[in-house]
Image 1 (cartoon, rainbow, N blue to C red):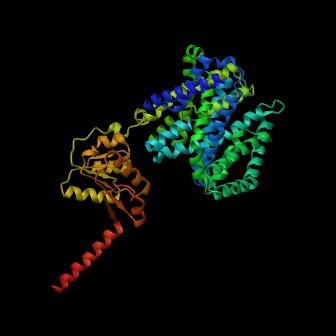
Image 2: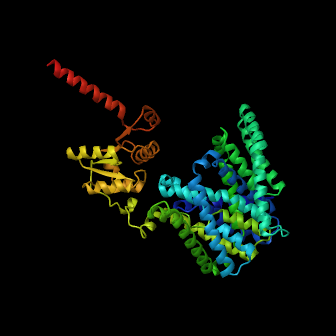
Image 3: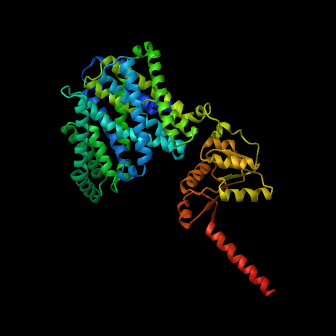
Amino acid sequence: MESILVIIFISLSLATILNIFLKKWGISHIIGYIITGTILSNIFNFNNQNNLHALELIAEFGIVFLMFTIGLEMSISKLKKMKEILFLNGSLQVGLSTIIIFMLSHYVFLIDITSSIIISLAFSLSSTAVVLTYLKQSKDIYTPYGEKSTAILIFQDLAVIPILLLIGFLSNSTLSIPEILLQTSVAAAGIILFMFTIGKKIVNWLLYFATKAKLEELFLGSVFSIVIGTSLLAHEIGFTYSLGAFIAGMIIAETNYHVKVESDISSYKDLLLGTFFFSVGTKIDITYFIYNLHYIFAILLSVMIIKALVIYFIIKRKANKSDSIKAAFALSQVGEFSFAVFALASSNTLLSDELSKFLILVTVLSMIITPFIVNNIYKLASFFVVEFFESDKITPINAKNHIILCGYSTLGRIVAKQLEEKKEEFVIISDDLRHVLLAQKRGYKAYFGHLNKSPVLESLKVDEASSIIVTVRNLTRKRLICESLLSFKEDINIIVNVDTVAEKKSLRDLAIKSFVLAQHEVADLLVQKALDNDLNIKL
């Protein structure tokens, strides 16, 4: 008992300290948990012990809760809205990547068919945890490349379920590959039909009465009961725990409780997921890693190049070169779900211990270098395409008490012309390259970038500007820009154009000094013109 408490104490302390340092370098906390597991494994000699079943069980439920939270974001209505960009691009990416990697694995490296299928499917997945976190923090999730990357990541998350199901059926040696694929499809359809009929009624009934009781612990207990219950049900029928949890998440996503459920279980999910990555770390042989680093790196580089090329040509069909290259860089890595795939395949003896060890190390190396790729994605893309790349191409301007005009659509052009006539010093910032090129053609200082990013704010010397005029039309972008400006400098003078009273009300929680309501200004001008004309007639 004492040794277990010591292990838990050291694990939590070491993981906390490591993640504090890794956070400063922009490295995912996942790596901190993996390193912790590796260190503890060597200190306490976990690899020679056979009593880690409890740890592996908890780790498996870490994946269960991760899949549940993904299900919460996969409401049927949301999937319908994104069906073209999500299902078409996503299926092409997973399908083509899987086929190419399978052919290399089986025909070049002479790995057996079953192992090659597992390897190709696992390597086709990218890192949702790292990439999506970066896209949200950088606000790139609202850019064209960010939207396309997010859609592919969502499809990959959906694809995890049939992949895990397929591995479960592959462990049944009495069936052929076509029979396995058919049984996987039929079985998945059956459980989905059951969960979205009878299961949906049970979930709604349970959450309704838990909410009526007005006890937080009862509501949380109901959520845990739903997640664990559906996971156990799926497992008993012959599927993975993850499938039941994922479907439960999708059902709750259709209810009014999904926001509360997601916030209530977030900390528990992260802790259990950390346990999963800790268990992955316990299986890493440092000596093996060092001696085979060149092979590991070569395989990873090959996989990343294949995935990057596949993603580039898929996105390039309906997007420009810049967005295609950035999406290719963002999704070229091997993701965290590969750990789950390799762990399940290894436990079912579908992969040899040696091969599983090698593949896990490839994924670990991928997770280590991914933060450095996504954090420098504009710089990397600039080697392949000429464009105005954010703050990378904006030399800090030599200006003070200047005006910054955000947006150069119709209203922005009128504002710029009036500022020019009044001989005011101003610069234009826009995330539409066409507008930037037009403004530069007219002789204005115009830059391509997002005003909600700190490097751009610094380059344009926002802290020394007299005013910021926001003329963009999209309400979400207005909020993002204003929030970033106010966090950069609290007393900054922001003038925001709003189209309706409702827009103005939605931005009232921000310390914006001036609003210009278009309809009211036009009304005032019309009345003023009428009064001036009436006065002239009287005179």
